Length: 249
Image (tube, rainbow, N blue to C red; front, top):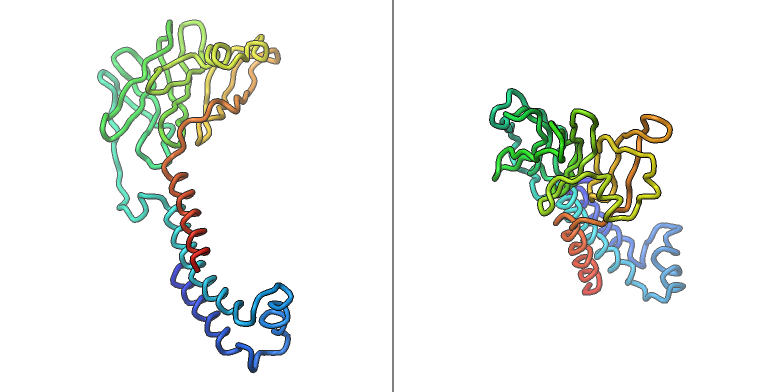
């Protein structure tokens, strides 16, 4: 329902409340406008005022929800953006994008071989490097705010899943899970080959590796949370604002 339709609905309902009121109301409306209100301890006429507030609240709620769901970029013109190629490379390929489209990750050829990249409009395409002993890397996923990147780094002998963030750079995901989260006993016999996706909040990662049953998919969940995107704050602020509006009315 559009905000305009909601406004029309609110006006229609207000009109119905005035027309029906306490006189000439249709049969069966008594419980809604009269006896029902009495049973709830509400004076006659309160229901009409509640209906008027409800109509306005519906419109405000839809406008707020539309703003939050569409995001701050709603209404911006569509655009096509070539992301470039790392120096010395002959190709690039994107595989993940942040919620607002400001951060893109993927892989690109470079003078040192295939390398994971992270792109923003301000920095352009930046190589993320490789894990120690690695010869190439690929980024597969990025969190909603663009702060955490996951993928795989390959050496001549093996492939390792990595996790990257601006403050600590590229790290072996297996080492992080053992050293930072104490999951060594759960990871006995495992080699995490590649992290292929990450949840929007950065707390859950999936991929594949080599375990006791051979090549197998895995899930890592409930990692330390990353800062929430600004949209979450706006949503909370909007709810508080609507609650305050309802109390004032």
